[in-house]
Every structure is written in C-alpha cells, then in structure tokens.
Image (cartoon, rainbow, N blue to C red; front, top):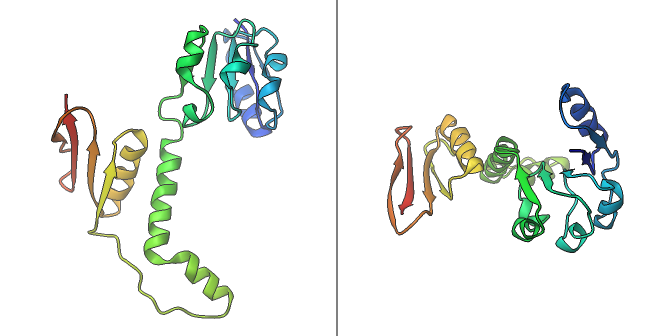
Length: 195
C-alpha cells in the first residue's frame, strides 16, 4: 500500500518525516497546504491512502481517485470536509485520530470563557486607547459550567474547569432517561440518557 500526505505544510511534513519508522507503508509528502479539492486525483496518482490535514474531499472528487481505499483525517470535524458514509459506499474508509485536538480545542474554549468573564477584549481596547476600566469582571471559581455532550473535547473542558475550581455539569444524550454517569470528582456531576 502506498500513501500520500496531500496537503502538508512544512512543519507537519517535518514531523511526519521524523516519526516515520522502518516498515511503515511508503508515504509521499506533498508539501503544499493550499491545494484545492480538484487536485486530489493527480496528487494521489493511484495511491490507496490519502492523509488529509484540512482539504475538503467531496464525494464526486473521491470517485475520480482510482485505487483510494483509506482517508486518514488529521483534524477535528471530518464531516465538515467529507461525507464518510458516501465514501464508504465507494469502498473508502475514513479514519480519525482519536483525541486529536481535544486538549487544544478545550483550552481555547476555556480561554474564551475566562476572557468573556473578565472582559479582556474590551479592557485591551480601552487600555490601548489610554483608558483604565474599573470593572471587576466575573470570578469563575465556584461557578457551575454546563456541558451539552461529553465527548473528548468536553471531557478536557471539564478537566481544566475542575482544576480551576469550577463545578461542572455534563449531559450526554444516549437514550431516554437521565442517570448519573460518573462521580469521578465531588464537584462534577455527569448525566447521560440511559439506553
């Protein structure tokens, strides 16, 4: 089997080369992060594996990729870039990296939450204009954060929030009735719908 990393920027290409081990399937690294979807068939050139960082793979383009069997998506939200069910009908399997980006996305979400609570954007604008705002903002320690869904990202948000003294409630839809799903922390209550 042969693979192509279709849209690698230079830093990802260097990491990919560094992590390659003897015995791995051969992978060509296409060092152009600005490809467009129409270029897939030419870049893949019959390869069975496409490694994709961020370029959409519409089903009509995938049909033109002779020999393609596996699409390894390196980001989050693969459905925003391709339709895994339609690709499966073409004999292509979409592979995801479990946990990819969970911590980074959670950190951004918590950072935005803190920035909003403290009014950091407005304070920054006012400071640059020479004004000193006298606003205490909202202290989040002891407050309760509600999470809808409890996948990898939400679990990381909960971990960070709990470490900051924020109480966490999480809801995971799984069936009809809400039942406690976890008591891993005294300050966290996680509910999921029972099947």
